[in-house]
Image (cartoon, rainbow, N blue to C red; front, top):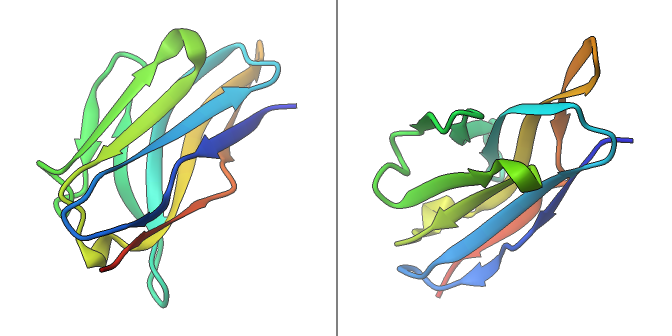
Length: 120
């Protein structure tokens, strides 16, 4: 059974940093695009950052220059380094991955979500 297991998150002061991790576990043939989404209270879920298996990255305009997405393919793990955090970054952050789990089957998987709160 394939799962995305997240870690990190918590409470941080404005201007601070946090690092999120997400590992894909289980019977996996290949992990394609991995990334992070977030949903703030009362708002729609939005893309934060994604990274392809080849290392190509895309970011939301609101986090460019502050957040960095990376991955270690050998560990099927994606990271989100968040610097210069702002109160408006407060949200539940969820990991997302496109995973091939049989020779012929791909599916999108989601992590359980982790809360990031930026407040003094």
